[in-house]
Length: 273
Image 1 (cartoon, helix red, strand yellow):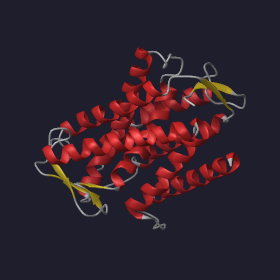
Image 2 (tube, rainbow, N blue to C red):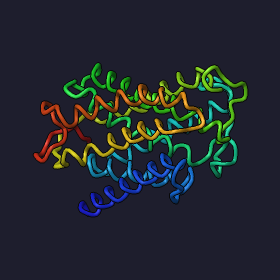
Image 3 (tube, one colour):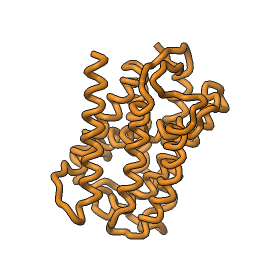
C-alpha cells in the first residue's frame, strides 16, 4: 500500500506540473488541458496523496476536514454577508453549488493550503512549532504564503467570470478586504491543524526531493504567473509575492542541512496516531 501511495503521488505530481506548464505556454502552444474543475481535482489528489505519504492517513483526513469545513463556512458566510471577503457571488462556471458556494471550492482551498503549508514549514525550519508561539508563527507565515498566491490568482480568475465582485475594488477590481479574509481563513485552518498535530513522535523515510514536491509545485506556479497574461502587471507581483517565499523555501530545502525534515535518513516529526 505504501509503495502504491508513493507511486501515485509521483504520478499526480507529474500531472499537476504538466497542467501548470500547459497553462504557462498556452499563448504559444495549445496543449490539452482539463479546465478549472479538472485541474482542481488532479491537484487536490496530489495534495492528499502527498500528505498521506508524509503524515499518514489519519492526520491527512483531519487536515482535509478542517480545511474543507472552515473554508466552506467562511465562503458561505462571505457570500451571504459580504463581511469577510467583500461583496461577491459565484457564477455557474465552477459547477454545482452547496448553498451559495460551488462544491469544488473547498477542494480548491485544500489544493492551495497544503503546498503553502509545506512552503511555510521550510521557511520556519528550526522554530519549535510544537510550542504555542511556534505553531502560531508557522500559521501566520503559512497564511501569508497562501494569501500571496491569491494576490496573483484572484484578478484573472474573477476576470474570467468564475466569481463576481459586485462593487469592484482597488486592486485589479478586487477589494482589499478579500485578502484580509484570506489571511483570516487560512490562519484559522493552519492554527487549528498545528494545535491538533502536536503529540507523539513518529519517523518518516521520505527523501528530501519527495518531501519538497509541494514546494516545487508552489515555485512552479510562481514561474507560471510570470508568463504573459491578461494583466501583465501581475508578472511583477508574482515574481515578488510568490517568488520570494518560493526561493527561500527552496534554499532551505536544498542548502540548509540543519533541522532537516527530508533527506534519505529517517527524520522525526510530530504526529497524532
